[in-house]
Amino acid sequence: MKKVKELSVFFPFWNEENNIEQVVLKAIPVVKKLAQKWEILMIDDGSSDGTARIGRKLARSHSNLRLISHNPNRGYGAALKSGLKNSKYDLVIFTDGDGQFDFMEASGFLEKLNGNDMVIGYRSVRKDSLIRHLLMMYLKIHDYILFGFNFKDIDCGFKLFTKKAIKTISPLKSEGAMITTEILARAKKNRLKIVQVSVNHYPRKYGRQSGANLRVLLRALKESLILWRELQKQPVKQAK
Image 1 (cartoon, rainbow, N blue to C red):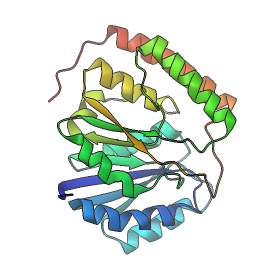
Image 2: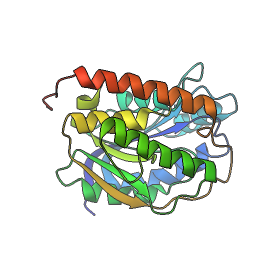
Image 3: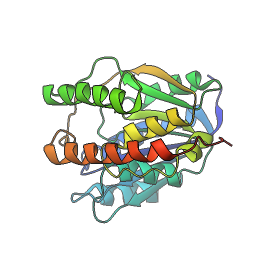
Image 4: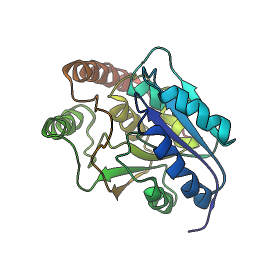
């Protein structure tokens, strides 16, 4: 495909010392083929292992890489917000930093953009535990009732945005797992054009998942109710 003019890429990391280097180094040759001008942001969400140290080493070795660190850990939503806020180019794409996605599939997102505001992935076969599958089913029902949308894979960590879309859905409030619902709810509220694309999903090789625990779930439910009340009062933005 023809290269886009410019592209920002970011990866959220939390205690991913065994994944960060492989994820970032595999992405570099891909993004070079996709964009004339590019950057990769490593968002370290207050890791307690060697993630930030490895990120600093990578940033020193590559001028197109930047490390942004939180202290202390704030949550997945905070990491995504930092990535979206600090990305400088007109197109912004992210995947989770756990190695469960193949960044080579980013080309399919760019091909699908074609006048849309956002391209969101859905996992063709989800390689997660049973509890995470059940939580995803619950989330889809919950979000359909509250926000009236029925996307195939709400919390898929592979999404592409235009800067217009980011400005339209900002400011984002969620600090935790409800961030993906908030992104889609604000996009739908403001009538952004969203297209879905299938992606592969791979088993996690290193580290541990953090989204399938009661504390994360309760925080997400609280944030979703706050978001629902806010959106009832909010007028539709005129996207610029």
